[in-house]
Image (cartoon, rainbow, N blue to C red; front, side):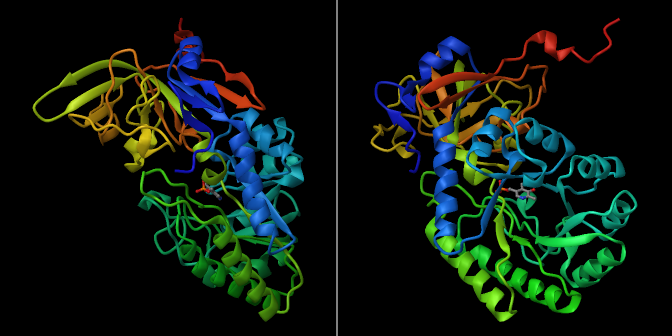
Length: 430
Ligand SMILES: *Cc1c(COP(=O)(O)O)cnc(C)c1O
């Protein structure tokens, strides 16, 4: 239970702000984010790594949450960006990141997108030899390559991004030839990159990937004669969503990663390249809650349903990945003890399914939960800062929700709620 920004008093509070008041004032569904929590996570990870190695660079993998106000918080902290699309490059530049701080890691990238990235002066991380050849016809520039190190891990098959079944990167056996060809094509390779998966909670899952990376780095330096400026081992650091899950031990993680890293550097006689990481979920995941209102309660012989106003249009992860999100009744947090420290934990007479408003059977946000609620209560869906709003849609013609940021004791609306009119905004209506 590592959610220090959440407290139960009479109601649920986030950074001291009453969530039911926020819901009353701004309506629901409503994403609420603690900016201070994001800063805490960033500083913790950076420090843990710097305790062992001086040249650390963190790229926020911003597909997790691209609200520009959140990008700005991390920019102020000195963070870099990992962007996966030209839209993310655009947003990061608007948030104030200088182009050198942006790494563009696309897949199935078009020539037009390559040109956009090259024109903006961001660092391009290539996903295939074909992409490299296409880029070389546009510009000669510094590049890095994403390698598939042959190993992967993740919380769901869809979230494993290394190994035989992954579409990402350049297969490890082809990496030497690719670096050589890059030089022949007039490009300047200065980095190597991998990202093996997402939602990883065990330190040891990362070890073989880092070892493999260092092996490849050794080969590249010896066989291609280049000094890599940075080695990027990707993101994938998980957060605990379920009551009994233990958080990834960041100090142990940092110790293991830097140990394998330094071992590899020494073995291959390398100087001190930057060690880069790309956390997305770890930085923002537990910083947000999604407030939603109870509309309807019903029971049948098989289930009790608590019907809320947020569905997989608002939060896609449960339907898409079968993900677990903690849910607490913010108006009456008597069952919140599974998720929030020092909160009461009363039993229930019947467990409940928490169901969204979409006309889809798969629109269930949470199953079999110890929670009681009545119509009008505000529920808080926890840990929705990563892949929450950024994956939301207007499905069923439901306008996208509003977003609130709490930072330094100040509460700000950072995105207005959409209206019905927005649903038609780009459509030809006559
Ligand atoms: C999504 C992604 C990440 C971040 O993944 P998390 O699991 O959120 O840490 C990092 N790097 C790349 C290239 C990604 O696509």
